Image (cartoon, rainbow, N blue to C red):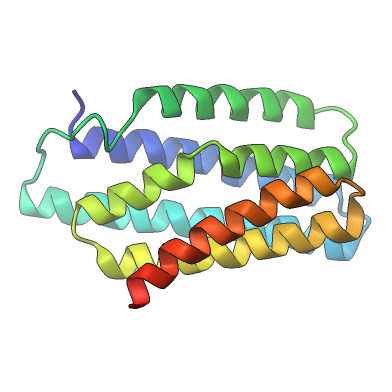
Length: 178
């Protein structure tokens, strides 16, 4: 079983990998300003996730908290799947990549449940306002991803998958606001 601090460190590392991948996509598509800006915004939002998690880790360290974390809160299999997906996507991004494939990769990452782990960690350490902010950013990002799929990718199944993610996280946000 991991401590909350261990879980935060592992999750921050994965969020950094996602940020780097999206930054790479921004550079890869630099010839198209709109596409490049979209990926840069996605990378910036991942950086915000990193910052929120590092802030939580710092607060916990100041409080002397290092309690064990419930394995249902921090599922190692999700971390392993996310790590493998990010490593594969990073390798793939080093060669020629179409915008359609980059968008597919982004949906795969967002479906990987890593964002659920981040949200659960934020909630588990009593950071409700950070969790709400995180959910708002996530819904915004996924909405932008859905728009980019609609505009640049003729794949109704991919659009449906992304829209399902938007709806799931929008519902989670709406339950907070009740």
